[in-house]
Image 1: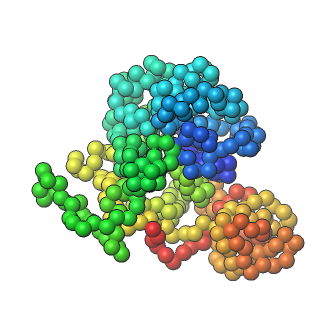
Image 2: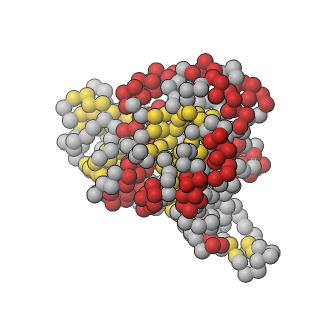
Image 3: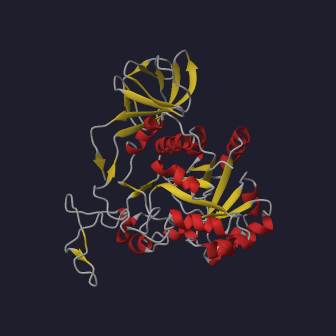
Length: 410
């Protein structure tokens, strides 16, 4: 069976983008009970569109129900059976064992996937979850390639999924109380404020008492450091090794990120899985989209103590990006004319680049910006109605961007 490419869908627009740019499946959250409470998520108004999209594409949808349930929340879950049943989900992603009886009783025909939040990284735990009725385990990010192989050998019936790209937590598979402590927003309730990526002032050097001489270097800019922040995961060069380890699904993190991120990351991994001969042209975009310094995480070792990649100490400050995301191309409305879904200001005469699911790069500076009546515009702002007329062969769903001079931002 071909390995699955699983992409994030923080809202309907991102879901469409994920499918258009090569995902076999997408994971999404409802307004309640998702570990990305601020991702936009999906509400009742999206149901008809999601049902139609799933019917059209035949691709799979997984629902994240992966918070740690409080008593009142688990009671509320039992009142939501009909609301949940209205969605065309193929599986439910859960971490709290208390939610399992609800899904087994009310949705026996649907799969249950164990969230990475449960921190499953050994075969005994994997076997236990399989015996409980879990079809798939989303492994904790701490699992190495060797761990994955051994788990798959011992529980061959169980599907294994792993995150292969995107942000990582400083806590053990996301179980962190730092956000709740500093901002009153709990990561275990889907409301993480990403406190590990805040900027901190350090007044003293960091040296562990029992390990004299082992220092964590503190690099500061403008008096602040990101010492608590992890690097971003990127396994684009190791897709074959991930497949050989026995994974059933490669998962991309990022329900709170832009459709530009969803498009270029999904597309790159699709091309890698398909062994596209022009792979390098698509891979290049992973270094232009907003990201922290990349790492291979724990896949090849347990961390820097064992001589592996250090996930926790970025050598660069803040995020890196080379392009500003401008929006996407809507439907064709006339000869060489397309409606724009504008996300950032576009000015006439700027060089704009376009990317598509199978098009690495197109560019144009000789184009016209138009209003709804066809009159020329000097610029179109975010959220405003506008159109573009160009000889460049565009299609609905193409992403627009422009190169920027700033290489870093915080």
